[in-house]
Image 1 (spheres, rainbow, N blue to C red):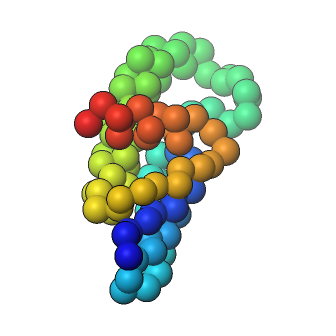
Image 2 (cartoon, rainbow, N blue to C red):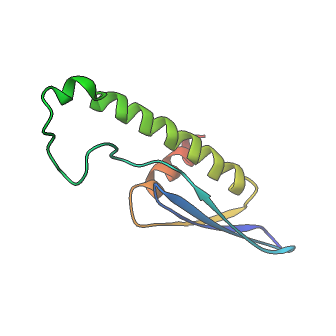
Length: 104
């Protein structure tokens, strides 16, 4: 029997089901990343010059991308031995992971 993996993924967590002749194994991997950190639901600061104390959007984006890369590495390590993969989820993460799998 060949090994099949089903993967539901978004930027916050991945749920993996691996089906093989040994049975079914399920696991969950949490990314521990948040897209937007800092401000709450568009609330404006009452403090002058807040933008000078907050990191730039570029540094937030680089940090977010770095966390996602580590997260995707963990997911790929778990599904590496699967002969077929069913990939699904609600957002962009499944497409990002698919591109990464095709590239690597």
